[in-house]
Image: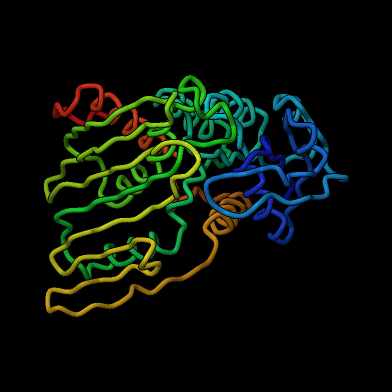
Length: 337
């Protein structure tokens, strides 16, 4: 199975590491405006997690500077889109129309209508479309999903999902909301998507927060209202460079509270009887798991049930609504997505 990887920044280099480890997968084309990266030298690539970039051998791959030209490569089966977010929709739709399967980095698109068109095009052309929502594949989050779906914890009454990092010192496009959607949109869509995955669509929501992208601040505190309780999503960019990345959650259910934070890499269940136990973890690298899953869906022609494109489109709509609620500064609004 032959891939074209479009975009060789932090996510593109991360996906390349996973792709090269999958048997039967070949990176047949790469695309970037960065001549150094296009040569295979990714050592200057940086992100908010993981180590430094590597040197890769692109000698057998087609090299392109324009994504549209890479789609004309005759042998490509699937396209992995790791470009700035405003390009996700147009390039994905063009790739689907060209008969390619598409893996697109999150956020799926800048707005819900574009994401919806992507879903429609995938159905029209019979191609696999999946957004790379890696949180669904991370062991600590998959363990929570398994515990809740297994019924052992009962009804969830309260939940908090937090994700914070420094404003990025790389990829200048992330600082431009017209291209990235802004820090809150780009970062917390992980948690919005996972909440939709676990709990479905909320009835209503409210949000407060602050945005000053020039100072590296973009944060939100949102509450999603469900019949069974309230789910909070909080975090964003907290000044540039020095602030460490963190992602954690606390879920309070009838049968116990599940806590996951940097001090408890394996989520811990604190039971009603005062007991505590770690949830079992399975799998390793989430990026490898999500891409392996996408490849398997392409090979079998099976829709990605673990990460459906329709749910990824709904996550875009939910994040846009959260940002609108932040502008209304705490006003409770209906969740129409």
